[in-house]
Length: 174
Image (tube, rainbow, N blue to C red; front, side, top):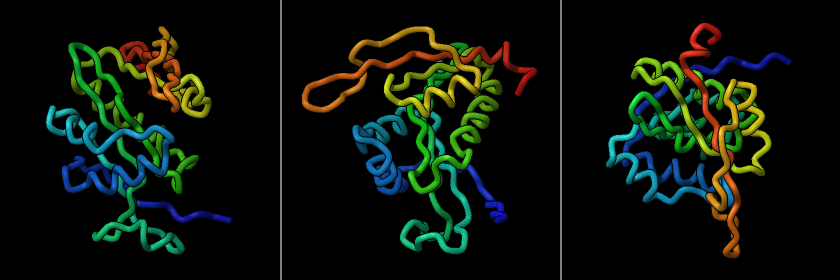
């Protein structure tokens, strides 16, 4: 069965988007970012974008925005000197495993290179095997471990794998 191609666009995340973003965040994670995390990121001027797509026939109407598009995902990054740190990348649960995370990573890599960044950094839960596989296939390497980095409920903490992508070494392959 052929699927219809979806037209998509990136748009800057704004304060007005935070309720919809937070709803996706809560649906996607056991320990989601708070609204304040997103608000503070926007206030700090960090790059934060939404991936919006046209609604396709058969999609639940409640997921559509006022403009008829659906929120497929979003990302928040923090630029630094010669590097960018990916703080949050999330695909809405209804749209996972469709290539949107890789699509957003591609866009972030292009943007990062445009900022003259040489490295892209991220942390990922050690237990998040799907994300780890995606990052490894993308070319990220594990460079460290942050002990007890993520909350894991009932006063427990989970370690984070620190991963990096050398943007100069991968420039010709992407």
